[in-house]
Image (cartoon, rainbow, N blue to C red; front, side, top):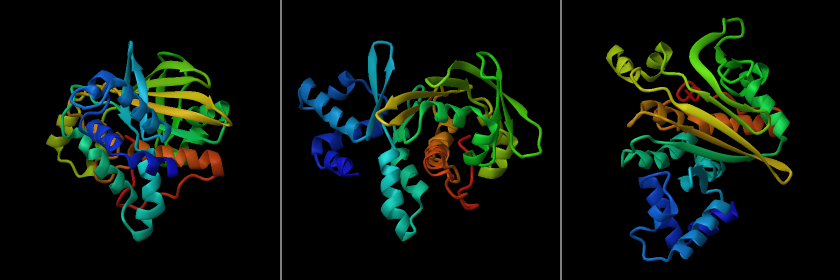
Length: 279
């Protein structure tokens, strides 16, 4: 956490984070535009932010795109804000709301965290129903994890596995897993208090994609979750990034995954005012 505060102490680095708040997923060239700094200086500042885990990167063709990473902000909220009964997820959501102030054609959510585990254990946690049920709000995911195969959901221990239209897009054991995401379901309307008309409008959103990239990092594992291919102004993007009231999204779910792998127990179930899954 000391690295986070050292990184935030510099006004130029705060300016770069502000720019990513306004429009996430920018290249170095885009971040340099309008700044009174050399390209080399911007690169050095971005390296500090990336080392502090405040910024994470992803490749798009030849470009390296930069994303605001909510993990350290989430850690600060857990350590201090929650202590004084401020909602942890609300603090994160308030930060991320700025990402939508300037609509993007296709918003992207990128989240990087480091877990004290092995690639094999993390892969099992992402793909085995008994594992997912423990940190995914009781949801078990089942698939043979072959490209093109369905990813089935079971909401209740004795319930049927449902096909929500999700398909495996890539599966490289211990390295990368990718599958298409589901659309909103009737239970989402009940949870978020949407009318039939509001739900119908959200059902028109195109199907998005989630990708888990796994890489060894010293004695731990670096997990990068990229959720993309949303419609412009997507409500699903707001849900998975924790911006909707009552949605912890990926930040909450992945914090529970990390806690489970490192301690043997997931995060406590949230109260009814914030209980939800990533979708």
